[in-house]
Image (cartoon, rainbow, N blue to C red; front, side):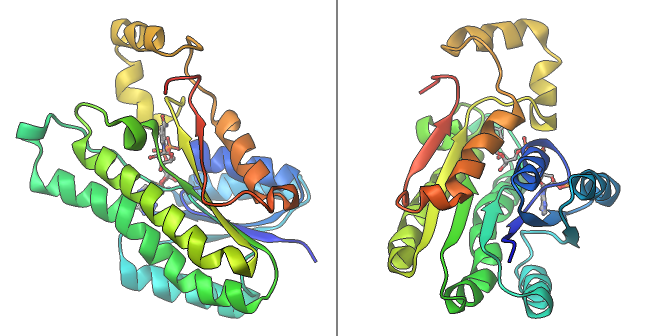
Length: 246
Ligand code: NDP
């Protein structure tokens, strides 16, 4: 039987790259988006061309009730997942004195509360499969080092690392690995605002030992390895994909 992997935020950016990479490796996929349904459907079409099957879930990962209802319904209909990639996330950057309550709350709800909202409904069905399973979360260099203008985002992404390591301890004896991938600067829409400032971008590249921005496929490759059967003895780890930034 083919393994099924659920990837949040797979309509574009890193999530889309992960979906296509995993499809090429023979996994069936459950894609997910909040608003960009047409983009997600285009990703499904690409996956189907690769000979894999994919279906789409659409909900806000910050909404606990929606997550529980939609994920549980999908599992009841199609069976428990082999793997989950908690990828969806947002930024709302501002210097801390100017950071609004809304900017703090939206980033914490979407990036950190979603760890609980998405994973809580999938865990018991995954355990009941009594087979190996894989969970990969997406943190960020910002969660490891802290980044100016991103106190909210750094807090959420550091929280994801703690939650990932704790869950890994709980699930290790069940053959379910739980790891985190922490990207540096990767070329997606999330970087658009930064990329439009050519001078600032050149300054940022000087800080990256590899002297370039990463490609989403380079993050996808790390996630795909952690999803593979060969990665069975790797759990509770944070793998950075950041050109040597930290
Ligand atoms: P993008 O902005 O390109 O894509 C974000 C994805 O998340 C989209 O699929 C979007 O869905 C989905 N999403 C956003 N908010 C919600 C929500 N509330 N509910 C459900 N889905 C949501 O982001 P990236 O691909 O750049 O980032 C992917 C992950 O990698 C994030 O966790 C990010 O923090 C992390 N990361 C990214 C870095 C970078 O440089 N790009 C660096 C370090 C970490 P929709 O299309 O429907 O809006």
